[in-house]
Length: 218
Image (tube, rainbow, N blue to C red; front, side):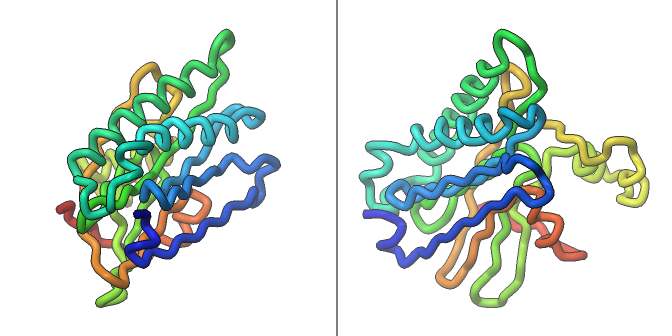
């Protein structure tokens, strides 16, 4: 039984935009109920490889027996554990690509897994997850960017001041940059008619409303 048995429809698209190389990658595994995006960065020749390698490592952690269970029997705790192991594996695998020379590259990551009556989310970097509530049409951002700007905002630095800091949009976390990476998966509820959007930074600037509200994890 897969995501389609719940009446879930999925679609994905990606493009190079102004870049000469498309470093974005996406994962749609309806059988396992896992969907994710990654945005490779740095070494242009290998950035796309890094993004794809990270997604493949996460996908492997959502194989059997998880993928064979009905969505209702997949628990949030199990999804959290699989995301933790998947992101660690992704970091190990992509960090190893730096050898023997240490080129400067890495990737962001944002993923959701369907479990029980909700979703489990995990993200690293500035790729984002949004939800549009079917009952109200309200849009909410579910993830907070791992950037210097957002870190300053979380410390209650006024946005007007934080935005002027040099390299304010620099990432504070990414997969494959350091030997270890931090990730904190969490669960949220969803209901019939809700739409979930995963996007990399090329879309998130357009998608973000002037004022957005955080959605409380379940």
